[in-house]
Length: 111
Length: 113
Image (cartoon, rainbow over all chains, first blue to last red; front, top):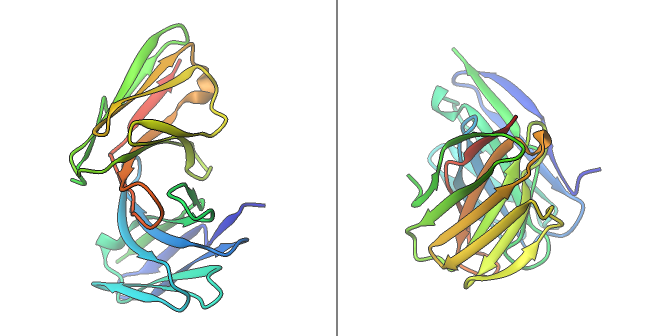
């Protein structure tokens, strides 16, 4: 099994609806990073979480790291077509800059 | 535009060719990375350079040879590749050490024929 599991693998959501993506680690995390990727392109940094219980928001996207620092969720409120893409979580599992990534969640927004 | 550029964006090469991928960062970072992204697999870390010194080689075959002449430039030299090496190759940079977010380039889509 993967060290870092993302769920769901894909998500189709009607425009305007809320959604949540989860990232679960088999180890305690030193840091958790959320990225967004358009197909075949580079990753765009969204947010970084380091402390248990930490929550950060940017525009309509909120990310949380649970108290035990083994799971993170990304929540999008009132989804828009611009939110479509692949969301990747990356984890620092060793206390250094070497990240392990999940397999990604492909988000499709339908009108 | 993230401040990390990669060239070429697309590359098709035969198994006997030699080619190089180039990455340049304009963010003042001191760590640079090569990643491989294949279909339906997690992003795989290949190499890490901190202050021009290689600090990670994630069991990458020797047909991939990285070079980091300075903190702003990173190359990936390719030779005698296999079709299964076809993938998106991504470069990233950050401040060295834990807690520094990595900024990615747009990637090079490599096809080995």
